[in-house]
Image (tube, rainbow, N blue to C red; front, side, top):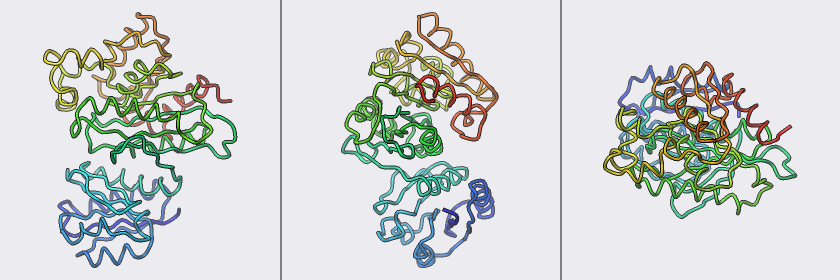
Length: 361
């Protein structure tokens, strides 16, 4: 894929020059020749969609423009709709995607998602009846024998504005390295409750047994970024059939996160209350409370990340080792997103360790 377009409706409440600058920067970074166009009205958006070029649309609030989101046609599979405001999920045509609520910076992720899902298509497989209960499978080229699996759990402080697209680039990179990448979406607690999140992650992992693909279920690693790091350790502790748990800049001390109010109260909101009101939920979910989890671990943390996360990770590793867990700790230069950036040296260190642990030569 060498060309794409970004369409911004005039009614979008943001500086259009800034949006265009952000969009052009990401297109250039991805090596894509693209156009960024500010258009007025639904008819102009529809005309642009008809061109058939892979597209990201920032539709704004105009009802006629938003009605195009559900419009079926050849363009749909190549279109990502992005709302910079927190709109909640919106219906889109089959094959299209909708992201929302990440502000101006979220346009970067929308463009990345549009490009990567067309450059490196995934097979979407449901593991439950809901629209958020699915995994996206990417296999290595010419996978003719069972390959190890990297299960990916996105972060975002367990909030619905962040979704599985955060792990697209890692999934593509892991497939190229010889892994089957199983990128899980799951219901988030802000819309569905904590129990739904926990059960979805477990169900998504178990669904690997029914996947019609050459996967080696004795070599499964669960990688979780940020809040997903906590989910990775929880499912590894609960499931028992995980060869390696890999929290990447994980939120590994939920009681500490509740007490410090990290992520503007993200832990408290996700788990349904502070630790002293729902202690049983924290006891089951907090990595600090679950050690030893009995599964080998590779704990990865960027040295330039939030200081509380660095503190949580260092103290978790000490507690897990003291409890008898087999834990390797990697802390190298990098910010919160370096751990999921295939171009970052920190990810290269992680991927090499992962390949060694799961015996990829």
